[in-house]
Length: 340
Image 1 (cartoon, rainbow, N blue to C red):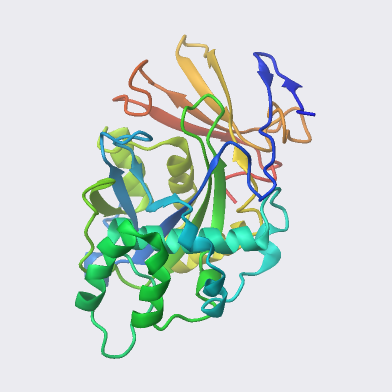
Image 2: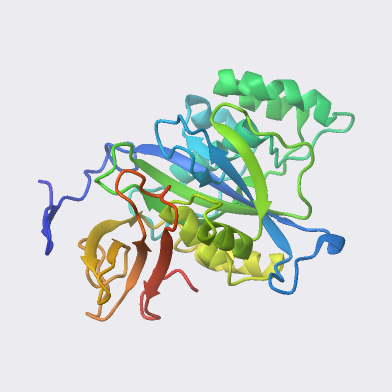
């Protein structure tokens, strides 16, 4: 029977579980956070001493979901991503990533990592695999449109043109798994994997269809651009930039991602509430696991907090509202907190 949890505002029904893994009624997808070291000559200013930049793309304003939002490369799982032949190319990642992740097993994690690799190639032209000797980026480029039209040929391209390391999928570290709140029309179950590279890939180009522009920003730059109204982020992307903003070097980020990978696939299903603060300002809050008021995964103490707050949201404009502001409320006791 479906479990219903009564909250202060309305009944909250956790989604039913599907037989094949994941949460029923949601589209499985994966997103790839690509962090690249910047050249020493292009080091950040004194106000932004971060030595790396993160790839960010803007979705088409006519998209049916998350229109005009700035996102990391990613998309939904396609049939070719679960081809058993991928196991002839890549090793299974460590089961550590799924040990504390309800409705997620090692095989599903494997498939989602393939999805993340393919979508980064389709949307941005990012191919995180070494090319075979004699193969050039010019040889790879025609495959991008082929893969976009038929996802099942991605494995053919990988076999013919690249020399992947068997542990390659394990280098994608799961740092978060967000589930779209129940109030949204288009809902996704999306793990976010982080990978690092020693330099920004050259000759990148957005696909011009799903994505219309791309940029590389440090976490402080991204947060500042949001506050200046030059960037449109949804809570998952803001949350991850907030997390990354703690780390100045690529090594610090890699170590932090390794720590997060133990809980990275735990489902962050936000429970939405709103209230008016002492100044009369309307505040929308996304309660996340570990918050005392979360209806499924509450904290152990009534004082536990783990929530993203949003102010300045205009009706009809949502996360595209000018002047929108995000905030983070969390306590050190929350096991799923952002700032770890």
